[in-house]
Structure formats: structure tokens, C-alpha cells
Length: 418
Ligand code: EPZ
Image 1 (cartoon, rainbow, N blue to C red):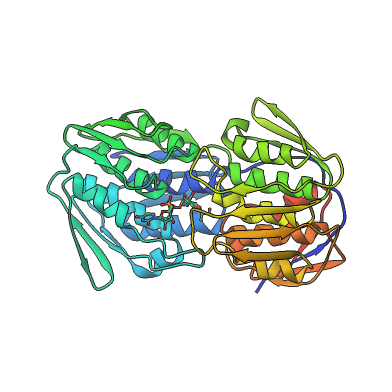
Image 2: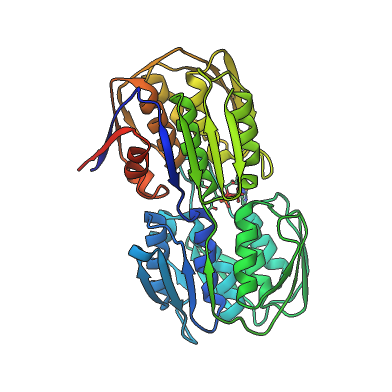
């Protein structure tokens, strides 16, 4: 199994470009199920989760023409495809459950495995199912599978109990082909939702209000092909900026809109960074050791849970004590015992971590547990003295394209050991 070896202590300097966003790409690729002709997506990152999505679409019977060297894929769906998403694929990648909406909308049926729990929390899909029921779907649970059917989905007023990203995506995709008007309320406002709405619009969907809590859709009878570039990955950008600040360096990250990461940039500033917000890029310059800063994770535009672990690695070496409160997932502190192995002083009280910043960390062998936890261990390793080995890097491969190459370009001493 691959490992990543890091020799810490080098301030990161230079500029890199982020890849296309994983969390925007997953539902957008899946939305091609809705389209009657070929969809071309550009700036698709070459990641494990993207490959799982292609496997899933291939399993359904779609044609997948993937060119990783150009970060481009062409997806076409025949008139009739298989409508089941098996346990093996959904277990590997929970985002697979967003096939429910498009399959129901276009083919009137879907059989999708329940994903089960995962490393960061229970993560049920009840909000997805309730929303689809409100659009007229009949839902049954049988043998670990959701079996959904609807002769024709009908537009409706759908209020989500919580602004769930996945449930908003599922409901939005389902409503594109429903009969009449749908009003989705209490929607997630994440930039990835906006990107999905834009991609659907490029296919001919009638949507307005994305990025606000109310999204209105007028159902259309069919969707057509498109040629759409995926937005830049704001979490990847935030991860490299955190690494830049933690190593007291100076970095520039190209390929995304700074507004998509504003809540994180404000926290970097509070921690002492000088931030430049440009068109399509973010600059960060450290001014010595970062300062302790408190953070609470919230739905967008709040501080993203997907940056919590990386921010904690930064706070582990900050001057002072900080509190990090996780409100989105109930079990997203798996990185804490591993950061402690580097010498970090962190205690957990319920959903809050208390981090007493240390002036230095020492390298150690570590175990990655999930995607963002792994990214936080890499940041820890980059500022620790000596050698850090991060084991189980397949977690990183799910969400960071060319991680060693990009960090290497910023001057980090990092290599993959096969
Ligand atoms: C998306 O997951 C992201 N994944 C996650 O990124 C991200 O952490 C999360 O949104 C929050 O921003 C993708 O976009 C593929 P939610 P999602 O539905 O859609 C509860 C990463 O590291 N909930 O907004 O699954 C749920 O348990 C990943 O890239 C229900 O109770 O997140 C959680 O506590 C990890 N019932 C909260 O809501 C439901 O039906 C938010 O989940 C749905 C969700």
C-alpha cells in the first residue's frame, strides 16, 4: 500500500493551480443521466472518486469516454439503461446516492443501495428520500436498497429539514424533468450547488435561485447535451493555503474564485496571514507564527467542515489556545489522535476540540483515516521537524489530484513510496 514520506520544516513558496472541484464534479457527471445527448465535461480531476463515478455510470450502461490527460470526459446515455446502483459502488462512494433523482426523473425507476455509515458520521439519506417523495416518488426500503418509482415526477413545494448538499442536488436534478413548477426551500447554498445548477442550465434545465435558500425549477420535457467546465476546487485551494501558512511561507493558488472560500480566508487573516484576493486567484503570505483562532463549522457561507481538519493542523502550531467546533458531522475528529502523535496538544470535549498551540511538532508515522483527515496529517508533517510517514494514502487519492507534485512545486520535501 502506498505511503507518503514528508521531511518537514521547509516554508512553502510559489504558485500552483487547483484542479476541478471533486464535489462539484461528482453530481455534475451524474447529471448526464438526465440528458438525451452527449455531455462533455472539462476540468474533471483524475481522482479515485471520479473513477468510481465512471464505474457507476458504466454499470448503468452509459458510454464513458474519459481522457485524463485532457481532464475531459464525454458521457452519453442510451434510451434505456439499467437503474440499479449496487452496494459495492455506493459503499465505496456515498455521493453515488445522487443517481436516485436523475434515474427517477428520466426512467421512472431506481434501485440504489443504502450507503451505510462512514468514518465521519452516520450520514443517513432521509432528507433525500423525503424530498423525492414530495415530488411524487414511491419509496420502499428492501434488502438494504432504496427502491424508488414514479410514473412521472410532479413539481411541488419541497422544504428541506436541513440544507443538505446531497439532498439539494438530488431534489434539483429530479425536479428538472418533473411536471410543472418545483420550489425547493432551505436549500444548501454551497458553490458546488451553483455549479450543478449552471451545468443543468447548459443542458436546457430551467432553474433560478441557486446559491440562495430557495431554488425554483420549471420542469422541461427533455434535457440535451452540453460542454461544461467544472469549477475550481475550493477545498483543495484551502488545504494548500493552510499548508502555506502553517509552514510560514508565501503561496499563490490559481484557478478559483476567492469568494467561494471567503469564510476560510477571513480565518487565515485572523490567524495572521496577509491575503490577496484576485480574479481567479488567492495569495497568502505568512507573517511569522500563526495566531490561535476559533472556528465553528457551518453550512455555506459558514466555515466548511471540509476544512476543519486542515485548520486544526494549523492551530496545532499556532501561538495560543483555540477552539474548533464541528457542527456538521458527529465524528469528524479522527485526525486528533494522529496529530497528537506529532506532538500536538488537543483535547476533545463533545463536538469541540481544544488546541493548545505548540511552537513545533516532531515527525512520526501516521495513519490516514478519511480524506480531509489525511490532508491535515500532510500539513502536520510539512511543519514537523524530521520525517513523517502518512500511511493509507488511498484516502488522499480520493480527493487531491497530484498532491505530491503540487506540494513539491511549492518546495515541499514530499514523495510517494510505492
Ligand atoms: C457533501 O456531503 C460533501 N460531499 C462532503 O464532502 C461535505 O463534507 C458535506 O457536503 C458538507 O459540506 C460531496 O459533495 C460529494 P450533507 P453530503 O448532506 O451531501 C446530515 C469531502 O471531504 N444528513 O450536507 O453527504 C449528514 O449526516 C466530503 O469532500 C442527514 O441527517 O453532506 C450531515 O450530518 C465529505 N440526512 C449533515 O446532514 C440526510 O438525508 C450534512 O450532510 C442528509 C444529510
